[in-house]
Length: 342
Image (tube, rainbow, N blue to C red):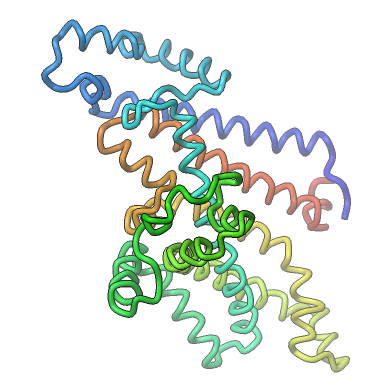
């Protein structure tokens, strides 16, 4: 491993900041040109014209769009995303309450997809064109082809309404709400830290189905890419030499192939994690999951652009940050990237 140069790190960081600024500009402009009426959502359709005009001026919507943008940037510099029409609370406060639920769901989903997708891709490549390989490819194809919301509805019908194996919509049963003091915001961890094992199992029963369904699409992508990376390495001379020396197929995968595709897998997992945070929107709607996806959807229904723009920026920033970290890891650990940078 060789340390990334300061100049190279700065260049990548500059790209991240420029991308984030472009996202901010595009999101803000779209939020302002959409045919929504946040003023009407606040004062009501039958409000007096003077009250309507006063609220419009209070929100700064009577100013040119470039002035609105600079005012928004000034607010962001002070941690102010505006006030949510939906709740009347600061958007930053709403997002702080909603994001942990999305983070918990997406994190469990990426853990499941990694522990299933990577081994499945390795085995599929090792036994190329076998029944295992064909099954893995079919599983991956189904995961890419069928919409998440369909899986969610079918999963609720079968495993909740039919078999009663999992909890229903929501993060926890109603009579358990408020019994765990939020510390990390992650209900599974908070309930364990406070010794509430009954609440933990109830929360786990609620999260497991949406997490598995959300993980399926990511697992399909991880499986396909892991298989592709592994097949590429299995044709290399060092693998052929290892097999000629009597190294077992599993030993070849574990000691030779896996270390050489580790950096590529890190990149894929980072992209998948960011995608799960974005893709949780549909899953949260189906399962009434009180996360950032459901919050943004409810805000979109009433034209609450402060909430929508802020949520988009937060999710976009996390996705870009994950890609940035994966890019840096790739440059640090992959010798081919270091050679190309010289």
